[in-house]
Length: 183
Image (tube, rainbow, N blue to C red):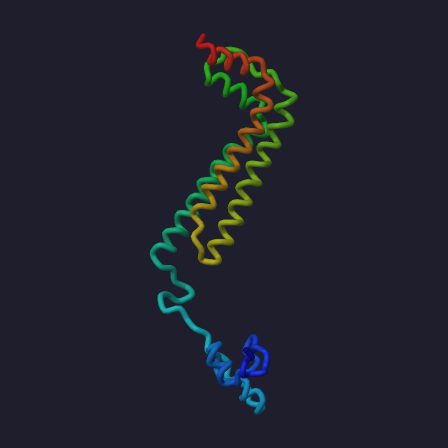
């Protein structure tokens, strides 16, 4: 059996008229206007109906307040903790005293290296968190979660860095051994 139409099967609308093509893709008649030398009028910029550019709606305002509040709280923590990390040997000695250990911290060489590294990471963690939060706030996107995630990640990294000098100190390791054996 032969096909009554000898033409090949059309692909991508090659046999469609311009009107059929426009109807299919739901586009206005700009092709004929451009051929005639008439440029179509530009579309008017649409304005949001809910709020003007300077106003914030209820939940966006709440998100902004919570985000900025968390960043301020984080900045306070960074400003009070970072100086103590740069002098980590005295901080660790005080920490051992709080734990009830009667011995002094002695791993000063590791504390001089890892304390400032941890302090720098703490400061950089807050700066990166603040920049990412500011960027999301400017784009009017939900941003309250960024300071929370930034704080968790930064504290985990700083804690891991401070584990190095603490784990090399005989007073601290003796305290951990006494805890693990129950004595």
